[in-house]
Image 1 (cartoon, helix red, strand yellow):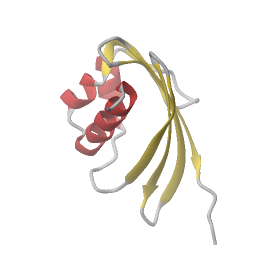
Image 2: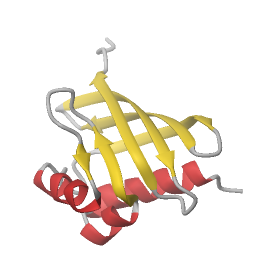
Image 3: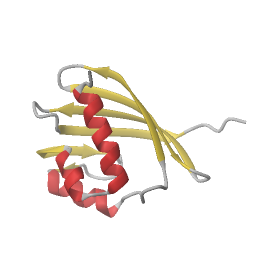
Image 4: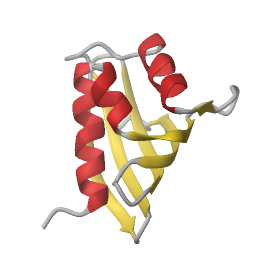
Length: 119
């Protein structure tokens, strides 16, 4: 059985692949908060999240993302991942997502750091 966190994360990855505004919007509640950069203000509200995503998107096919659920409770999901941009960048990711009763994110916080190179 698929958990709400697994369903949300799979939908996020599909939206990431497509950059489709409707798919992106469907992930978030009306007043969701999206925090990904410590040097900028969080995006607040579905429209701001979609606009910000489209301003700073990754082109389809330029990355891969492997992920797994670290912890999931009623409205809380912790996701660990690895984003690879071939021959360019390789990141470790940690996402904290809070979900509403409909399975939409009310808050998304992302941390990422370059993956140490292995020789």
